[in-house]
Length: 124
Image 1: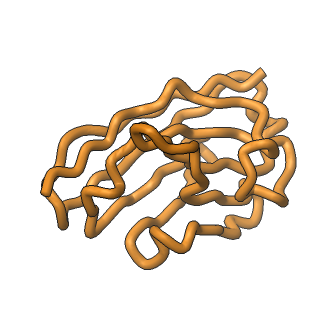
Image 2 (image 1 turned 90 degrees about the horizontal axis):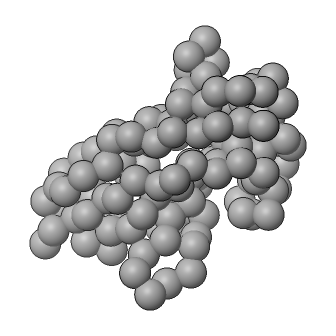
């Protein structure tokens, strides 16, 4: 079992930046990919970004390409989501997730472990 704890959410004005962190603990040797998803009020959960743990290949939703950057620190078992040029439509609860596979990471069904989520609110 892998436990995930997110941090770094908050309130920011449009155009600002935030960095989310997700620390993994437990059976981290079983993690091959990690991702970020978000759920806005009244909307379905959607894919944001993902990264393979070994090679560091990254994947992004079209809505965040060029603004968000996912990275990982293998030594710290931590994945980050740097969010720049934030827009009000980025407002959501952001969830970190860990996968036992390194493909299909744009699909929530590929992830076995999930964090509790952290709120990001972007004001206009």
